Amino acid sequence: MFESAELGHEISKEIYEAEVPKLREALLDAQYDLKAANDFPVLVIIGGIETAGKSETVQTLNEWMDPRFIHTHGFLLPTGEEAERPSMYRFWRALPPKGSIGIFFGSWYSLPMLARVFGRTDDDALRESIAEIRHLERMLHNEGVLVLKFWLHVTKREQNKRLRRLEKDPDTRWRVTKAHKLLAERYDEAVAIAETMIRETSTGEAPWIVVDGSDHRYRTLTVGRVLLEAMRRRLDSAARAQLVTAPPVVSQVDNVKLIRELDLSQSLAKDEYRKELEEQQQRFGRKVRSKKFRKRSLILAFEGSDAAGKGGAIRRVTGALDARLYRVVPVAAPTEEEQAQPYLWRFWRHVPGHEGIVIFDRTWYGRVLVERVEGLCTEAEWMRAYDEINEFEEQLVENGAVICKFWLQIGKDEQLRRFQEREQTGFKRFKITPEDWRNREKWEAYEQAVADMVDRTSTRLAPWTLVEANDKYFARVKVLRTICRALDAAL
Image (cartoon, rainbow, N blue to C red; front, top):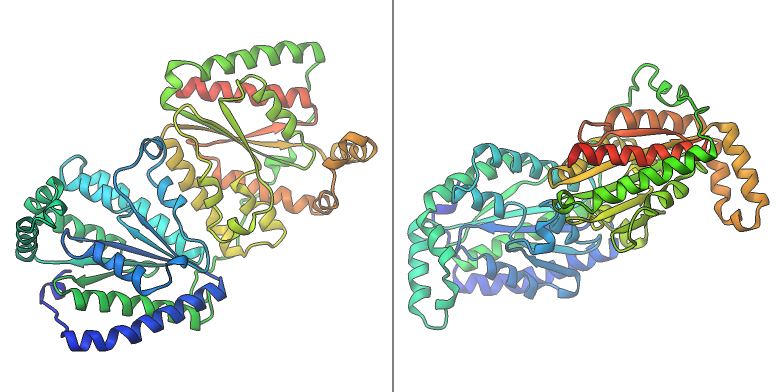
C-alpha cells in the first residue's frame, strides 16, 4: 500500500517555484467559488507517519488560501469536557459549515491507531473503531461534505534521519518529544496498523490519498493539486448527483396499528395523580443525585402529536430537579447556521457530560417525521436517517448515557378539542398556529411515519415509549415511571 510512496519523488526548485503561483491562484479561485456557491463544505484530514511533514502541509494550505474561510483544528488528547462524551463529539463540533474548508490535523483516526500501536487495545477494538469511522464518513458524504484524506508517508530510514537532524539543532530539538521517539521505535507496528485502517476506510465516499513526504516540494504540490482537482470537480458538476439514492420504502404489514390500537381511554383520577406524581418525582430526584449517576448522563427525547402535552410532561419532569442540573433544548426549524451543517450536528453539540441531564422538546427524529411528511428532505435522506440515528444513539449509550424516548399520542377528536380550547383561551393562543391545522390534514401520513420510526429505531439500547396522552394526568405519570425504571436498570 505504501510502495509508491517509498520510491522517493523529487521536484526541482525551479519547477516548484514556477508551479506554486499558478496553483495558489487556482486554489483561491476555487475557494471563493466554494464560498459563493455555499452548497457544500470541504473537510481535509491530514494524517501520516511522524516527521512526514504533516504540520508543514497544514501551514502551507493556510498560507496559500484565504484563512478567513478555513477552519483548522489540531486534535491532541481529549480535554476533560470531551472525555466525558462520545469520542466523536469533539469532531462533530469542529465540522466546517457549507461554503468553507475544514482542516483536521489529527482526527478520528489518531487515538484508535495510537492505542493499538501501544497495545492499550486489541484488534476487536480497532475493528469497532473502523466500523464507527466508516459510518461517520458515509454519513458526511451523504450530507454533501467533500471528504479528502491525506496520509503522508516516509520510510523508517528517512524518519530516523529526520529525527536525528532535528535533535542536533538547538532551534528544533524541542520538536522531538518522547512520543515521537516511542513511535519511531514502533515504526513497523505503526505502519502495519495504518495499512489496516487505510485499507478498511478508503472508500468511494472518502478515499485515502497516500503521498510521499520525503520531498517537501513534491508533498505540498501533490496535496494542493489533489485538493484543487477535487473541489473543481464538485463545483463544476451537478452538486450532489453522485449521492446514493434510496429504494422505495416498504412498510411492515399493519405496522400503523402500533399507533391506532393504543388504548387512549386510560386515565387517572386527580387525587391519585397528585399522589403518584409526588412519589415518582421524589424517586426520580433521588436517583439522579445518587453516587451511581456520577459517571452517567440522562437524555430525554420528547416527540408527539400536536397538542399532546409534551410541554406539560416536561415541566413535571423538571419539577423534580434543581434547575442547575438540567437543560431543556427546544427544537424548531433549523437556523441558517444549522442548515450549513449535517442535520445531527445541532444535536451533537448539546450532548451532556457526566451527571448532565438534557431534555429535547422535539428531536433528531424530525428528519423521519415532519421532514419526511412535508417533503423537506428527499426519500434517500430520510431513509438513511434511521441507520444514522441508531448509530448516534448507540454512541451515546456506550458513553454512559441513559436515553428515554417518548411519543405522546392523542386521538384526532381530542386534538380538535384542544386546538379549539387554545384558540378561545387568551393566554394559550400562542400555542396554536396555522401550521398545526395544516399538520392535522396529514394525520394518516404522520401515523405511518411514526409507526415506521418506532419499528426502525426502537432498539434495546434506546427503546421508544408510546404514551397514551388523551388524559394528561396518566401521560405525565407514565413518563416519570418510565424514566425511573430506565435509571433503575442502568444504575
